[in-house]
Image 1: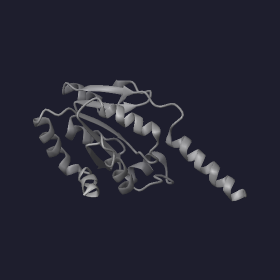
Image 2 (image 1 turned 135 degrees about the vertical axis):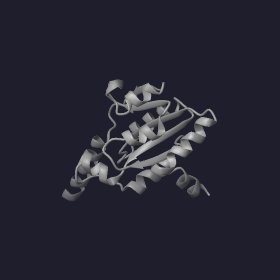
Image 3 (image 1 turned 120 degrees about the vertical axis):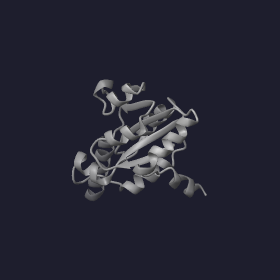
Image 4 (image 1 turned 90 degrees about the vertical axis):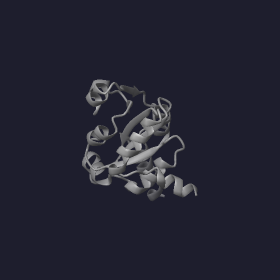
Length: 169
């Protein structure tokens, strides 16, 4: 039953528009964010939880394996798209995970038209993909501070260090 409920949160690109329409008709506040979420760490969990606190439904746009390779290089992603989608969908505060193939989620944002568009880091709101669409539709664009010391790059460096250390012994 739990596994079925997790899988139910992974929604196709084609179905998300109807789901969002249903939620909005019930007065839900739609929060949208996106990313690769290749190596999920404390920084991601903290960021996503803070994003979820901004509304009643959190939708995560997830870069497909193909788009992660374009952005991060041939050695990425570490975890395949299905694993990443299941991991994110298993978080209690995540309402939906939607895969997208492009390098940016602009087509997905145009379908969803979120009430709140969120990114983490040191972005200026006006530089976030989807800013104009969100603002034009009376939405809000927010930047959430990142948790210092946690990133996928740092996690991968630690893994590489430990692997090479283990090989030497």
